[in-house]
Length: 120
Image (cartoon, rainbow, N blue to C red; front, top):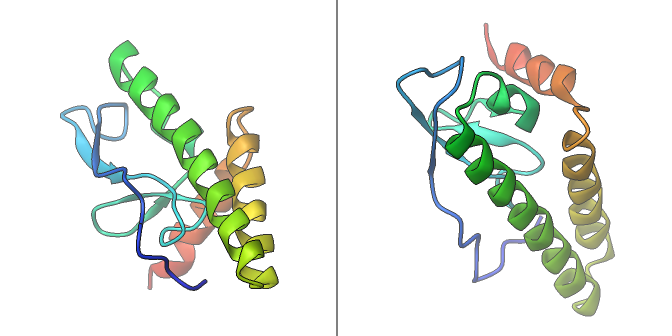
């Protein structure tokens, strides 16, 4: 997908959960990271994985950033449509739909499979 000048305003977010009890930085989904949250090594995660064992404050931050990421991808889709980049617009909408599904606990298995494919 063609990258725009105003990439995600979201930065690394500290997640504290059962995966990272002491906390770890994660990047929210955006037009660069696609429909996954990513750790600092680039490993993909679904929101439900990040919420497992998360304290109340971390959960609230992660959910709020997730919703912001959905809005960001929809904005990317609108810009792409306006620029005539239909494929990019469809892809951004697809990623946004996927992230909406994560709010209901979907797509965890796909994130795990994506991580497994990257490992030798």
